[in-house]
Length: 432
Ligand code: ADP
Ligand code: ZN
Image (cartoon, rainbow, N blue to C red; front, top):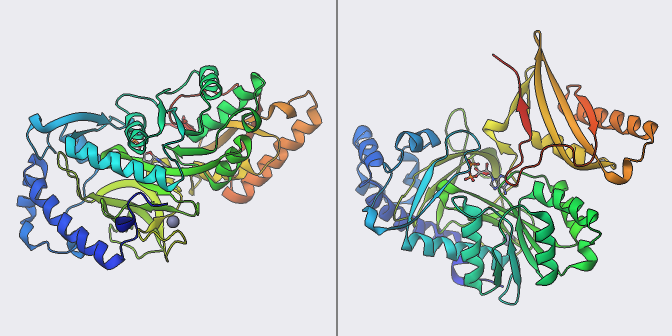
């Protein structure tokens, strides 16, 4: 049941000691990079004085802007000859950032992904269909290597081409998939279209859902549609990508691998660490990266550490399902709203289909929120009264939660734009 029992169940004390040693080694490497060499000199940091993991607070924070300013090689801590691969972020919030890996880095990352997938129950007897974009995006090759390491049969399907995905699943009896949650919802409508029932006509039993925030309700909806067990997978390219934090069979929070990362949650305003249990921004430090160590990286992702041990016996702390990124927060009439709040409410309403979009407009001095919601196809039968009731119900549900009355527009199933990658949930047309 464990990929690496000793490390996965190591007591917190030994884990901290290990982190202290690996932090020391990381700093020795990091100081060779242009960026950290300069930063350490500016703040007069004596690398030798950092002895334990508790000292991490003395290190400078690193931001996406730092990476952008040091484009492309300013964070390199080794010679370019030692590098074997480059990846990049998706560029969801601006210019993409790049990350370079040595052979050692790829080995360590691959091992983490194998650990994650094994934890969720994948074995060498599984047929694994990876429905993520291959290429610079980390979700493709990252998972691919991890699954091969377990010894599963890997189908590198890549993203999109839904009918072909379904055909592959049927012909080769796929048992495990890696998929973006918004795409999983869309794919279920294509299953319907081609008259294939994923529960009855496929052998799917495990799914890894990652790359974008999604609510517990959305997970359950996807599990119901397909009849598999779905596990939340989190990572960001700056920290390798997927493999950082992953759900165990308990499906109650994601274990974040503390032998590879130092985990802090900080208050995004004061930048001070908050105790376990309190919500804040996840900040992580790489502990095994050779090519491009990154210290105290501000992920801009909001979560909290779930206090207490996990039933599965793993000792690495768990983080809660993400609320979203600080960049996703919409401010409307002084109220802070995350897209995931809208999603949670929508998932509760029967008749809601598989896609939605939020549009923000400014009318005079007033901000307005329009929520476009696809109606489930079985609900879209020309009964206008039913649609009117549905629209009112959605409006009331949302108003009750976000305290603003949105303009709810019901649209035909399949009519909202779809992406093969991360869903674009919010379109902000307000001008300052
Ligand atoms: P970008 O930052 O440009 O989107 P990445 O491809 O590196 O590039 O994406 C990492 C980000 O994706 C994370 O910082 C997080 O915001 C989001 N993300 C990835 N997996 C999850 C997940 N399981 N739940 C919520 N958000 C996720
Ligand atoms: Zn667990």
